[in-house]
Image: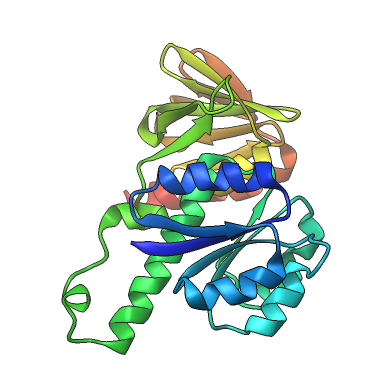
Length: 252
């Protein structure tokens, strides 16, 4: 179990992350605080391994916290402001979660953190039992076969298998996920979802569409057919997509 500390000046943000941690079998919540100065004390006394750290806090910002701690702890940044991403990664943070944080995006960051910690443990002790076996597939973000998306109520999350997805359509701040005989609408941007879906089989082919190439029945000019649905192939994505299709055809 990875021992986690949440540091955020907003209690509702702590409550959300605590709920996510409690749903993740390999994480353990050992503490939380709205005071980053107090967090500097807690990381030692609670033997913290992973910190979920907000950036915008009044007493001490998350970036200032990182400068004090150096690289001693593994950190996942949580913030509503994307402009801090570059500076955060300069401090070797594991991941950068943009609020509002979905459970599937949180889970991806958690898997990444655990994989990094296991790798560090194996490097430090190559004779340990963990070093004698491969990291289980579910802990690898690329090996996952599903994701969770937010449902219509506050604490409802729906499991979606990648193999069931035909295509995804962007609708401003929402996306529609289409599978055989089903359409699921969830609050998330298409750009954020594109980061979650593995390539292959998923590729963005238009500013409003991501498709599974496994589900394509035909490509005719600038139209991609998936079942009875006609999806436009955007000019921006056309060359890259068609070159990928040609390369896959050569490998067959």
